[in-house]
Image (tube, rainbow, N blue to C red; front, side, top):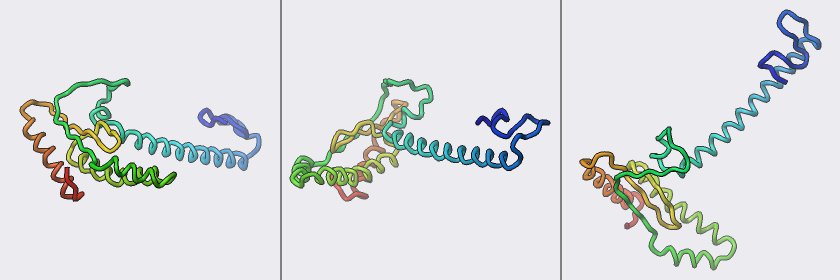
Length: 169
């Protein structure tokens, strides 16, 4: 059924007669609306999936509308790396728990790294790499004169992470 052109069962062009009457037209419209609602639900699910995937792409790539994949760029910036000490021992302890140990390790890492990532993003940093129990973040510097300010942002971020998460870096 294609309602864009006014065609479908029980429909005739303007000025013509309907073949099946108003009840058929009402059913046709009801079906059309139901189809549109289903398409909108699917689109919403797709938007949620894209949003989740986009969270893994650095902001400086997402903000550039002319980005083509594969993507390469270089820029001046300040880097910050954080690593969990004792991760190997933690992994070994969870591996001894059997099948559920991997899930528990994943939940522990997520619970630990998510607040850290949130701190970095709140401090205008951009996480460009996760590697197991570590991540690498950058603060892009557009002008060489801005280095002191960006370095201070990174220091402030590290201190913020320590205070809000009660950890040492």
